[in-house]
Length: 108
Image (cartoon, rainbow, N blue to C red; front, side):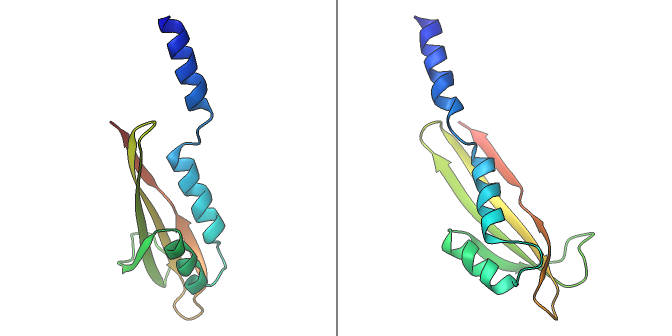
């Protein structure tokens, strides 16, 4: 009986995309290198991200940086995540030159 329950749980969870993967796909759909930063930030904001100007990170190319974040959670499987998107762009053209999209997740 226990084996059947564990197998059923594994099958259910195998069909779920990880929250990190969904975040990565969301950022890739909204933001692209070479694109204009304003529409990219508007797209992330429409997807629930909050964006603010940020200090330039070590190793960032010349220009400006924006930090976007979004918190997410799920009841099944239970987890909590904070998703980030760090975007560096050239101040004179507004073109995106670098994107990083790390996540931090934990199960309960």
